[in-house]
Image (cartoon, rainbow, N blue to C red; front, side):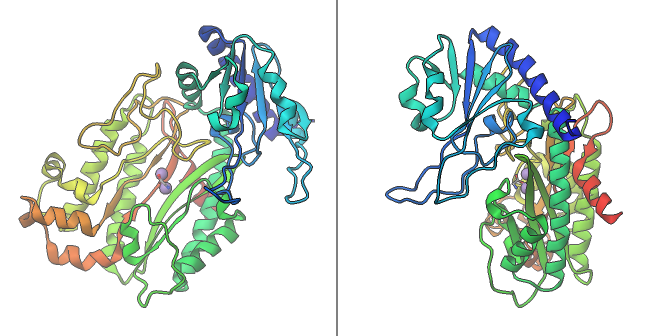
Amino acid sequence: MPTSQGLLYARHVEDRCAQLDRLLGELGYDTLLIHSGRPEMRLFDDQAPPFRAHAAFVSWVPQPFAEDCLLELRAGRKPRLWFHQPRDYWHVAPEPPASWWAETLDVAIVKTAAEWESCFRQQTALAVIGRERDLGTLLQGADLNPAALVAGLSEMRTTKTAWERECMSQANDIAAAAHLAAAAAFEADASELEIHLAYLAAAGQDQDHLPYNSIVALNENGAVLHYQHRSARRPEQMLSFLIDAGADRHGYAADITRTWTQPENRDFDDLIEAMDRAQLRLCDQVRAGVSFIDLHRQAHLAVAAVLEQAELVNMSPDAMVESGVSSYFFPHGLGHFIGAQVHDVAGQVDAKGRALPPPEAYPFLRLTRDLAPGNVLTIEPGLYFIPMLLDQLKASGFSDKINWPQVHRLQPFGGVRIEDDVLVTEGDAVNFTRQAFARLEG
Ligand code: GLY
Ligand code: MN
Ligand code: MN
Protein backbone atom coordinates (compact mmCIF):
# COMPACT_ATOMS: atom_id res chain seq x y z
CA MET A 1 0.00 0.00 0.00
CA PRO A 2 1.59 3.34 -0.96
CA THR A 3 1.81 5.82 1.87
CA SER A 4 0.05 9.18 1.49
CA GLN A 5 3.54 10.62 1.05
CA GLY A 6 4.07 8.14 -1.79
CA LEU A 7 0.71 9.01 -3.32
CA LEU A 8 1.39 12.74 -3.24
CA TYR A 9 4.77 12.18 -4.83
CA ALA A 10 3.32 9.87 -7.50
CA ARG A 11 0.73 12.53 -8.44
CA HIS A 12 3.45 15.18 -8.53
CA VAL A 13 5.46 13.13 -11.02
CA GLU A 14 2.34 12.32 -13.03
CA ASP A 15 1.43 16.03 -13.31
CA ARG A 16 4.96 17.03 -14.20
CA CYS A 17 5.21 14.28 -16.83
CA ALA A 18 2.01 15.53 -18.50
CA GLN A 19 3.40 19.08 -18.55
CA LEU A 20 6.79 17.92 -19.76
CA ASP A 21 5.34 15.82 -22.58
CA ARG A 22 3.65 18.95 -23.96
CA LEU A 23 6.80 21.01 -23.55
CA LEU A 24 9.07 18.47 -25.25
CA GLY A 25 6.54 18.14 -28.09
CA GLU A 26 6.41 21.92 -28.58
CA LEU A 27 10.20 22.17 -28.65
CA GLY A 28 10.75 19.07 -30.79
CA TYR A 29 12.70 16.93 -28.31
CA ASP A 30 12.25 13.17 -27.81
CA THR A 31 14.13 12.86 -24.57
CA LEU A 32 15.32 14.98 -21.69
CA LEU A 33 18.19 13.97 -19.43
CA ILE A 34 18.61 15.78 -16.10
CA HIS A 35 21.90 15.29 -14.25
CA SER A 36 21.95 15.64 -10.45
CA GLY A 37 25.44 17.20 -10.47
CA ARG A 38 28.89 16.31 -9.26
CA PRO A 39 30.94 17.82 -6.42
CA GLU A 40 33.52 20.35 -7.59
CA MET A 41 36.92 20.42 -5.90
CA ARG A 42 38.45 23.72 -4.94
CA LEU A 43 41.34 24.81 -7.16
CA PHE A 44 44.47 22.64 -6.65
CA ASP A 45 42.70 20.88 -3.80
CA ASP A 46 40.97 17.58 -3.10
CA GLN A 47 38.25 19.21 -0.97
CA ALA A 48 34.85 20.18 -2.35
CA PRO A 49 32.17 22.44 -0.81
CA PRO A 50 29.15 20.50 0.51
CA PHE A 51 27.27 18.93 -2.38
CA ARG A 52 23.66 19.65 -3.23
CA ALA A 53 21.95 18.26 -6.34
CA HIS A 54 20.75 20.67 -9.05
CA ALA A 55 17.26 21.87 -8.14
CA ALA A 56 16.10 20.94 -11.67
CA PHE A 57 16.76 17.32 -10.61
CA VAL A 58 15.42 17.64 -7.06
CA SER A 59 12.12 18.98 -8.39
CA TRP A 60 11.62 15.50 -9.90
CA VAL A 61 13.51 13.22 -7.52
CA PRO A 62 13.37 13.67 -3.71
CA GLN A 63 17.11 13.08 -3.34
CA PRO A 64 18.76 16.46 -2.74
CA PHE A 65 22.16 14.98 -1.89
CA ALA A 66 22.42 12.28 -4.59
CA GLU A 67 25.57 12.75 -6.67
CA ASP A 68 25.98 11.82 -10.28
CA CYS A 69 22.51 10.44 -10.90
CA LEU A 70 20.72 10.83 -14.20
CA LEU A 71 17.00 11.18 -14.79
CA GLU A 72 15.82 10.09 -18.23
CA LEU A 73 12.48 11.51 -19.30
CA ARG A 74 10.74 10.46 -22.51
CA ALA A 75 7.22 11.33 -23.61
CA GLY A 76 4.72 8.66 -22.54
CA ARG A 77 7.28 6.64 -20.50
CA LYS A 78 7.74 6.17 -16.78
CA PRO A 79 10.70 8.37 -15.79
CA ARG A 80 13.87 6.33 -15.47
CA LEU A 81 16.31 7.19 -12.71
CA TRP A 82 19.88 6.01 -13.06
CA PHE A 83 20.67 5.98 -9.36
CA HIS A 84 24.37 6.12 -8.62
CA GLN A 85 25.39 3.92 -5.71
CA PRO A 86 29.17 3.70 -5.96
CA ARG A 87 31.21 1.01 -4.28
CA ASP A 88 33.13 3.35 -2.03
CA TYR A 89 34.91 2.58 1.22
CA TRP A 90 35.78 6.26 1.80
CA HIS A 91 32.17 7.39 2.17
CA VAL A 92 28.83 6.00 3.19
CA ALA A 93 27.09 4.86 0.01
CA PRO A 94 23.67 6.42 -0.70
CA GLU A 95 20.77 4.50 0.84
CA PRO A 96 18.97 2.16 -1.52
CA PRO A 97 15.91 3.94 -2.93
CA ALA A 98 12.94 3.83 -0.54
CA SER A 99 9.85 2.24 -2.01
CA TRP A 100 7.57 5.24 -1.35
CA TRP A 101 9.33 7.23 -4.06
CA ALA A 102 11.15 4.57 -6.06
CA GLU A 103 7.88 2.89 -7.11
CA THR A 104 6.93 5.97 -9.08
CA LEU A 105 10.15 5.84 -11.07
CA ASP A 106 11.86 3.15 -13.06
CA VAL A 107 15.03 2.94 -10.96
CA ALA A 108 18.22 1.41 -12.28
CA ILE A 109 21.04 1.23 -9.75
CA VAL A 110 24.47 1.84 -11.25
CA LYS A 111 27.85 1.53 -9.61
CA THR A 112 29.57 4.07 -11.87
CA ALA A 113 28.36 7.08 -13.80
CA ALA A 114 29.81 5.47 -16.93
CA GLU A 115 26.88 3.05 -16.82
CA TRP A 116 24.39 5.76 -17.79
CA GLU A 117 26.55 7.30 -20.49
CA SER A 118 24.86 5.21 -23.19
CA CYS A 119 21.74 7.40 -22.68
CA PHE A 120 23.61 10.14 -24.52
CA ARG A 121 24.28 8.01 -27.57
CA GLN A 122 20.86 6.63 -28.46
CA GLN A 123 18.85 9.80 -29.14
CA THR A 124 18.34 12.03 -32.10
CA ALA A 125 16.48 14.93 -30.47
CA LEU A 126 18.05 15.04 -27.05
CA ALA A 127 18.06 17.83 -24.50
CA VAL A 128 20.22 17.78 -21.39
CA ILE A 129 20.11 19.74 -18.16
CA GLY A 130 23.41 19.84 -16.32
CA ARG A 131 26.83 21.43 -16.26
CA GLU A 132 29.20 21.56 -19.20
CA ARG A 133 32.14 20.52 -16.99
CA ASP A 134 30.32 17.33 -15.89
CA LEU A 135 28.77 16.30 -19.21
CA GLY A 136 30.51 18.23 -21.98
CA THR A 137 32.32 15.27 -23.53
CA LEU A 138 29.09 13.25 -23.75
CA LEU A 139 26.93 15.77 -25.57
CA GLN A 140 27.68 14.98 -29.24
CA GLY A 141 24.93 17.07 -30.77
CA ALA A 142 22.57 17.08 -27.79
CA ASP A 143 21.35 20.51 -26.63
CA LEU A 144 22.73 21.47 -23.23
CA ASN A 145 20.41 23.68 -21.18
CA PRO A 146 18.49 25.06 -24.17
CA ALA A 147 16.97 28.38 -23.10
CA ALA A 148 13.38 27.64 -24.14
CA LEU A 149 13.40 24.32 -22.31
CA VAL A 150 15.01 25.75 -19.18
CA ALA A 151 12.37 28.52 -19.21
CA GLY A 152 9.55 25.96 -19.62
CA LEU A 153 10.87 23.76 -16.80
CA SER A 154 11.27 26.81 -14.56
CA GLU A 155 7.74 27.97 -15.32
CA MET A 156 6.39 24.55 -14.31
CA ARG A 157 8.10 24.95 -10.95
CA THR A 158 6.32 28.24 -10.18
CA THR A 159 3.07 26.35 -9.48
CA LYS A 160 3.69 24.03 -6.60
CA THR A 161 2.00 20.61 -6.62
CA ALA A 162 0.34 19.19 -3.49
CA TRP A 163 3.52 17.19 -2.89
CA GLU A 164 5.70 20.27 -2.96
CA ARG A 165 3.33 22.20 -0.71
CA GLU A 166 3.38 19.38 1.80
CA CYS A 167 7.19 19.26 1.75
CA MET A 168 7.40 23.00 2.33
CA SER A 169 4.81 22.92 5.08
CA GLN A 170 6.83 20.18 6.80
CA ALA A 171 10.08 22.10 6.27
CA ASN A 172 8.40 25.00 8.07
CA ASP A 173 7.44 22.71 10.97
CA ILE A 174 11.08 21.67 11.34
CA ALA A 175 12.41 25.22 11.06
CA ALA A 176 9.82 26.75 13.40
CA ALA A 177 10.71 24.31 16.19
CA ALA A 178 14.38 25.13 15.68
CA HIS A 179 13.63 28.88 15.76
CA LEU A 180 12.07 28.45 19.19
CA ALA A 181 15.15 26.57 20.40
CA ALA A 182 17.34 29.38 19.06
CA ALA A 183 15.20 32.00 20.83
CA ALA A 184 15.57 30.06 24.08
CA ALA A 185 19.37 30.00 23.62
CA PHE A 186 19.32 33.79 23.08
CA GLU A 187 17.31 34.15 26.31
CA ALA A 188 20.07 32.16 28.02
CA ASP A 189 22.73 34.62 26.76
CA ALA A 190 24.35 32.17 24.36
CA SER A 191 26.83 33.25 21.69
CA GLU A 192 25.93 33.26 17.99
CA LEU A 193 27.76 29.97 17.55
CA GLU A 194 25.99 28.40 20.54
CA ILE A 195 22.63 29.60 19.22
CA HIS A 196 23.45 28.21 15.78
CA LEU A 197 24.29 24.81 17.29
CA ALA A 198 21.06 24.86 19.32
CA TYR A 199 19.17 25.58 16.09
CA LEU A 200 20.82 22.70 14.22
CA ALA A 201 20.26 20.27 17.08
CA ALA A 202 16.56 21.16 17.28
CA ALA A 203 16.16 20.95 13.50
CA GLY A 204 18.01 17.64 13.41
CA GLN A 205 19.81 18.95 10.32
CA ASP A 206 23.41 19.94 9.89
CA GLN A 207 24.24 23.25 8.17
CA ASP A 208 25.23 21.35 5.01
CA HIS A 209 21.68 20.01 4.75
CA LEU A 210 19.93 23.34 5.24
CA PRO A 211 18.79 25.18 2.11
CA TYR A 212 21.00 28.22 2.81
CA ASN A 213 23.58 29.52 5.26
CA SER A 214 21.81 30.48 8.46
CA ILE A 215 22.09 34.12 9.52
CA VAL A 216 22.52 34.16 13.30
CA ALA A 217 23.11 37.76 14.32
CA LEU A 218 23.33 39.35 17.75
CA ASN A 219 23.02 43.10 18.32
CA GLU A 220 24.35 45.33 15.52
CA ASN A 221 25.17 42.26 13.38
CA GLY A 222 21.45 42.14 12.60
CA ALA A 223 22.03 45.15 10.33
CA VAL A 224 24.28 43.09 8.04
CA LEU A 225 21.77 41.68 5.58
CA HIS A 226 23.68 38.47 4.83
CA TYR A 227 25.77 38.34 8.03
CA GLN A 228 27.98 35.31 7.49
CA HIS A 229 29.84 34.77 10.78
CA ARG A 230 28.78 33.04 13.96
CA SER A 231 30.92 34.45 16.70
CA ALA A 232 31.84 32.14 19.56
CA ARG A 233 32.15 35.15 21.87
CA ARG A 234 29.24 36.07 24.10
CA PRO A 235 28.69 39.83 23.81
CA GLU A 236 28.77 41.83 27.01
CA GLN A 237 25.27 43.10 26.38
CA MET A 238 22.57 41.02 24.73
CA LEU A 239 20.35 43.59 23.07
CA SER A 240 18.75 41.84 20.13
CA PHE A 241 18.79 38.71 18.02
CA LEU A 242 17.93 38.29 14.34
CA ILE A 243 17.85 34.77 12.95
CA ASP A 244 17.18 33.89 9.32
CA ALA A 245 17.33 30.10 9.09
CA GLY A 246 15.44 27.39 7.27
CA ALA A 247 15.12 23.65 6.96
CA ASP A 248 14.98 21.02 4.25
CA ARG A 249 12.27 18.47 3.56
CA HIS A 250 12.94 16.13 0.63
CA GLY A 251 14.84 18.93 -1.10
CA TYR A 252 12.27 21.70 -0.47
CA ALA A 253 13.12 24.76 1.58
CA ALA A 254 11.72 26.74 4.45
CA ASP A 255 13.09 30.29 4.83
CA ILE A 256 12.10 31.98 8.09
CA THR A 257 13.33 35.10 9.89
CA ARG A 258 12.47 36.22 13.39
CA THR A 259 13.80 39.05 15.54
CA TRP A 260 13.89 39.04 19.32
CA THR A 261 14.75 41.35 22.19
CA GLN A 262 14.06 41.68 25.90
CA PRO A 263 10.83 43.48 26.88
CA GLU A 264 12.80 46.06 28.84
CA ASN A 265 14.21 47.35 25.53
CA ARG A 266 10.87 49.05 25.02
CA ASP A 267 11.55 51.05 21.86
CA PHE A 268 13.12 48.18 19.94
CA ASP A 269 10.48 45.74 21.22
CA ASP A 270 7.80 48.13 19.94
CA LEU A 271 9.58 48.24 16.59
CA ILE A 272 9.53 44.42 16.37
CA GLU A 273 5.83 44.40 17.28
CA ALA A 274 5.02 47.06 14.70
CA MET A 275 6.99 45.22 11.99
CA ASP A 276 5.27 41.97 12.88
CA ARG A 277 1.85 43.58 12.49
CA ALA A 278 2.92 45.19 9.20
CA GLN A 279 4.26 41.85 7.93
CA LEU A 280 0.97 40.11 8.74
CA ARG A 281 -1.01 42.81 6.92
CA LEU A 282 1.22 42.29 3.87
CA CYS A 283 0.64 38.53 4.06
CA ASP A 284 -3.10 39.29 4.10
CA GLN A 285 -2.71 41.04 0.76
CA VAL A 286 -1.12 38.01 -0.93
CA ARG A 287 -3.56 36.50 -3.39
CA ALA A 288 -3.90 35.54 -7.05
CA GLY A 289 -3.69 38.49 -9.43
CA VAL A 290 -1.76 40.81 -7.10
CA SER A 291 1.33 42.45 -8.61
CA PHE A 292 4.31 41.69 -6.38
CA ILE A 293 5.88 45.00 -7.43
CA ASP A 294 2.78 46.75 -6.04
CA LEU A 295 3.01 44.67 -2.88
CA HIS A 296 6.65 45.66 -2.52
CA ARG A 297 5.58 49.33 -2.74
CA GLN A 298 2.94 48.61 -0.09
CA ALA A 299 5.71 47.16 2.05
CA HIS A 300 7.68 50.40 1.71
CA LEU A 301 4.61 52.36 2.79
CA ALA A 302 4.18 49.99 5.74
CA VAL A 303 7.82 50.32 6.84
CA ALA A 304 7.56 54.09 6.36
CA ALA A 305 4.47 54.17 8.59
CA VAL A 306 6.45 52.32 11.28
CA LEU A 307 9.31 54.83 10.93
CA GLU A 308 6.87 57.73 11.26
CA GLN A 309 5.03 56.23 14.24
CA ALA A 310 8.26 55.45 16.03
CA GLU A 311 9.21 59.12 15.46
CA LEU A 312 12.37 58.10 13.65
CA VAL A 313 11.53 60.02 10.49
CA ASN A 314 9.46 63.17 10.39
CA MET A 315 7.84 62.69 6.97
CA SER A 316 4.57 61.21 5.77
CA PRO A 317 4.83 57.58 4.59
CA ASP A 318 3.96 58.68 1.05
CA ALA A 319 6.75 61.27 1.06
CA MET A 320 9.24 58.78 2.51
CA VAL A 321 8.52 56.28 -0.26
CA GLU A 322 8.34 58.90 -3.02
CA SER A 323 11.69 60.40 -2.01
CA GLY A 324 13.42 57.04 -1.51
CA VAL A 325 14.03 57.69 2.21
CA SER A 326 12.32 54.39 3.13
CA SER A 327 14.96 52.53 1.08
CA TYR A 328 17.73 53.62 3.45
CA PHE A 329 15.98 51.56 6.14
CA PHE A 330 14.52 48.79 3.93
CA PRO A 331 17.12 48.19 1.21
CA HIS A 332 16.11 44.72 -0.05
CA GLY A 333 13.17 43.11 -1.79
CA LEU A 334 9.95 42.09 -0.06
CA GLY A 335 10.39 38.45 -1.03
CA HIS A 336 11.08 35.76 -3.59
CA PHE A 337 9.72 32.48 -4.89
CA ILE A 338 10.80 29.50 -2.81
CA GLY A 339 10.83 25.77 -3.57
CA ALA A 340 13.61 23.34 -4.47
CA GLN A 341 15.85 26.43 -4.31
CA VAL A 342 15.49 28.92 -1.54
CA HIS A 343 15.44 31.68 -4.15
CA ASP A 344 13.39 29.76 -6.64
CA VAL A 345 13.39 30.20 -10.38
CA ALA A 346 11.32 32.39 -12.72
CA GLY A 347 10.68 35.28 -10.34
CA GLN A 348 11.65 37.91 -12.90
CA VAL A 349 9.99 36.56 -16.04
CA ASP A 350 6.36 36.27 -17.08
CA ALA A 351 4.64 32.96 -17.85
CA LYS A 352 5.94 33.17 -21.42
CA GLY A 353 9.52 33.61 -20.23
CA ARG A 354 9.74 37.32 -21.11
CA ALA A 355 11.95 39.37 -18.81
CA LEU A 356 10.26 41.38 -16.06
CA PRO A 357 13.12 43.46 -14.67
CA PRO A 358 12.70 45.07 -11.27
CA PRO A 359 11.80 48.78 -11.16
CA GLU A 360 14.76 51.15 -11.10
CA ALA A 361 13.97 52.24 -7.55
CA TYR A 362 14.03 48.63 -6.29
CA PRO A 363 16.89 46.83 -8.07
CA PHE A 364 17.06 44.00 -5.50
CA LEU A 365 13.47 42.86 -5.94
CA ARG A 366 13.71 39.18 -6.95
CA LEU A 367 10.02 38.71 -7.70
CA THR A 368 8.34 41.00 -10.22
CA ARG A 369 5.41 38.85 -11.39
CA ASP A 370 1.70 38.99 -10.78
CA LEU A 371 0.94 36.27 -8.25
CA ALA A 372 -0.88 33.10 -9.34
CA PRO A 373 -2.50 30.26 -7.39
CA GLY A 374 0.09 27.67 -6.38
CA ASN A 375 2.98 30.14 -6.13
CA VAL A 376 4.92 29.89 -2.87
CA LEU A 377 6.91 32.95 -1.86
CA THR A 378 8.39 34.72 1.11
CA ILE A 379 7.10 37.92 2.69
CA GLU A 380 10.06 39.48 4.50
CA PRO A 381 9.93 43.21 5.15
CA GLY A 382 12.81 44.63 7.15
CA LEU A 383 13.83 47.79 8.98
CA TYR A 384 17.53 48.18 9.72
CA PHE A 385 20.04 50.69 11.04
CA ILE A 386 22.87 50.09 8.55
CA PRO A 387 25.83 52.42 9.21
CA MET A 388 26.81 52.76 5.54
CA LEU A 389 23.28 53.70 4.48
CA LEU A 390 22.77 55.99 7.47
CA ASP A 391 25.93 57.87 6.43
CA GLN A 392 24.44 58.29 2.95
CA LEU A 393 21.14 59.45 4.43
CA LYS A 394 22.98 61.98 6.59
CA ALA A 395 24.64 63.37 3.46
CA SER A 396 21.33 63.50 1.56
CA GLY A 397 18.88 66.38 1.50
CA PHE A 398 16.66 64.59 4.03
CA SER A 399 18.98 64.56 7.01
CA ASP A 400 16.94 67.21 8.83
CA LYS A 401 13.89 64.90 8.74
CA ILE A 402 15.65 62.19 10.73
CA ASN A 403 15.55 61.89 14.50
CA TRP A 404 19.27 61.13 14.70
CA PRO A 405 19.51 60.77 18.51
CA GLN A 406 16.83 58.04 18.42
CA VAL A 407 18.34 56.40 15.32
CA HIS A 408 21.74 56.27 17.04
CA ARG A 409 20.15 54.91 20.21
CA LEU A 410 18.61 52.03 18.22
CA GLN A 411 21.63 51.40 15.99
CA PRO A 412 23.22 48.86 18.41
CA PHE A 413 20.09 46.73 18.02
CA GLY A 414 20.87 46.17 14.33
CA GLY A 415 17.49 45.73 12.72
CA VAL A 416 14.24 43.82 12.40
CA ARG A 417 13.18 41.32 9.75
CA ILE A 418 10.15 39.07 9.90
CA GLU A 419 9.89 36.44 7.17
CA ASP A 420 7.20 33.85 6.42
CA ASP A 421 6.62 31.42 3.55
CA VAL A 422 3.16 31.73 2.03
CA LEU A 423 1.12 29.89 -0.60
CA VAL A 424 -0.95 31.94 -3.04
CA THR A 425 -4.58 30.92 -3.60
CA GLU A 426 -7.60 32.60 -5.16
CA GLY A 427 -8.62 33.53 -1.61
CA ASP A 428 -6.57 34.05 1.52
CA ALA A 429 -2.95 32.98 1.37
CA VAL A 430 -1.87 29.93 3.36
CA ASN A 431 0.93 30.97 5.69
CA PHE A 432 3.05 27.83 6.20
CA THR A 433 5.24 29.58 8.75
CA ARG A 434 2.54 30.99 11.03
CA GLN A 435 0.72 27.65 10.83
CA ALA A 436 3.89 25.87 11.91
CA PHE A 437 4.42 28.17 14.91
CA ALA A 438 0.71 27.87 15.82
CA ARG A 439 0.96 24.05 15.78
CA LEU A 440 3.92 24.27 18.17
CA GLU A 441 2.04 26.53 20.50
CA GLY A 442 -0.63 23.82 20.51
N1 GLY B 1 17.60 33.67 3.75
C1 GLY B 1 17.76 34.40 2.56
C2 GLY B 1 16.57 35.18 2.26
O1 GLY B 1 15.78 35.47 3.13
O2 GLY B 1 16.30 35.50 1.14
MN1 MN C 1 14.00 34.90 1.99
MN1 MN D 1 15.52 34.35 4.86
